[in-house]
Image 1 (tube, each protein chain N blue to C red):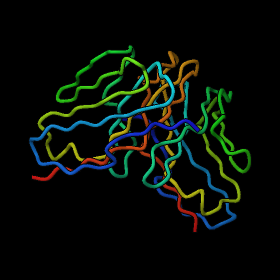
Image 2 (cartoon, each protein chain N blue to C red; image 1 turned 180 degrees about the horizontal axis):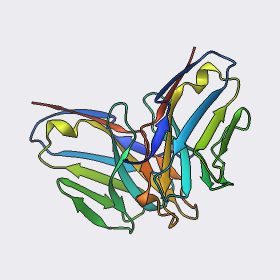
Image 3 (cartoon, each protein chain N blue to C red; image 1 turned 90 degrees about the vertical axis):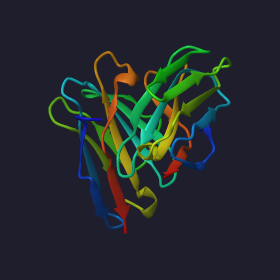
Length: 115
Length: 112
């Protein structure tokens, strides 16, 4: 998973605040995926993005969650008005233009705690 | 939503023992992947399987893609302490671009 940088590693937010999670993909990778992992569970797909495009957001909650991957800069996962149930580890993965997921690397994750 | 069931949920084994875990699904997958996750880290890919019946090895790890395309197993031979972690299977559904469906995980603990 070398190269995919996520920050912050840990984030504490009070209920009702906004959380912004950043993901810088491996250099040269143009595909980014966000996954959420609740305690003691497997990862659940949230969204798949290419530069400036959302390709598949079928795993994103309908409200409060949004994601972007601008032409310049990192991908951002934004959670508005956080609630306790949003507490989880959020992982980003990136893959090269060939879009073969077996060439994708995961970052170390951002652990969000809502108090 | 779609879920992969892994068994066992957890296992304690002694160093040097062989380990076997499996993953089953109600749906067909066209790719199976096995990942290992250490505490506080992201998943790291161990083995990828692309064809039904395929048997692939990576060092002490061996994995197979079931004939029905609805299951897979992972074997670890001669376990060592650094094998400790959570092992996840993941399937890529036919027709989807990239998203994976992850299993529930098998937590492995190795004692000396």
